[in-house]
Image 1: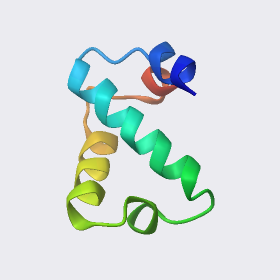
Image 2: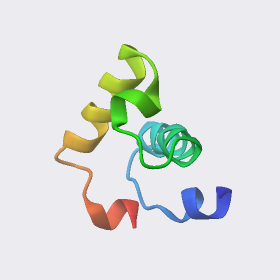
Image 3: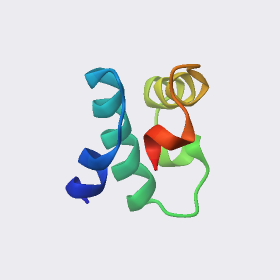
Length: 62
């Protein structure tokens, strides 16, 4: 799992770190919605902020 996270190409280390947390949360709760997977408002909001960031695109994630 760490290899996949490290293979992402985020320009900002904070985005890479947040993606790592999100990846683990979604993996642990596969098939659940983002709010359920994140389990609290702070994590949910951080996830939506990351995914809506114009500097983050699917190529960075894939």
